[in-house]
Image (tube, rainbow, N blue to C red; front, side, top):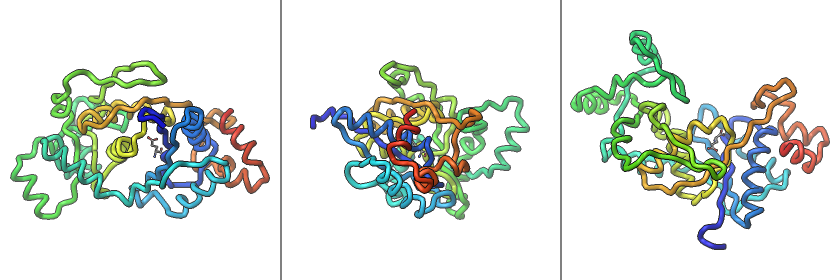
Length: 281
Ligand code: GLU
C-alpha cells in the first residue's frame, strides 16, 4: 500500500443501537476504502459518559461484524485517550487561543436576552464573549478556587493566525469555509475535558484518515474542523458527506426508531445482505 492510500473511518457514538442510517454511513466508509484497496477504521466516540454506554459499544462491534463490515487495526475508543486531547488543548492554550469560560447555560441565556443581537451558529446561539473579557487575575483566581469551567476557542485570535482563507474539498470540489460562524466554540466542556470538534479532528489526524465520510448534518462542522486542523498543523482530509436516511414519513432516522435498528431487523429474520441493500438504497 502506498503512502497516499485511502483511509476512511466510521465513528459512531455509543448512545444507542445502530440503525439503518448508521449502516449507510458505515457502508459508505467501508466501500470507499475497500474499492480503493485502502483502510477502513472504526472509532468509538464515547467522551460523554452521560450519553454513552459500554453495552452499546459492544453492540456496535457485533452489528458491524454481522453486517460483514470488517475494520482494519484496533478500534480507537476515545474515552481511553483523554490525555491526548489535553496535550492538544495545552498547545492551543500556550498560544493564547483558548480561554476559560465559567458561564452556566443560564448566564449565557440571560446575556443573550439582554443584548440587541443574538446571532446563531451551527451549534446554537453564539457565545456573547463574557469570559473572554475577564482580566487574567480573575481567571486565575476562579480556576484556583476550583470553579468549573469550559475552554473556548478565541475565534478572532484564531482567525488572525491564518495565512489565507480556509477551504475544504467536498466530493472533489473546493468549498470555502467560514469558521467564524461558530463564534468562540467550546473545545473542552465543563463536565468533560474535551469536545466532539476537538476529538474528531485530533483522531482523524492521528489515525491518518484521508477521506472523512459522514452524514450531511455534520457538513457545517467541517468549517470549524478545517480551522482546528490548520491551527494544529494537522493534515487536511477530503470530505464526502452523504445524505441522511429517512423513514416513510420523510423524517430522519434516529436512535428512538427502534424498528429501524440493525438488531431488530436481524431478530426479525432479515438477512445481512438485505439490511445492507436497504441501508445502501
Ligand atoms: N460521532 C459522530 C456521530 O455519531 C460522528 C462524527 C464524525 O463522523 O465526524 O454522529
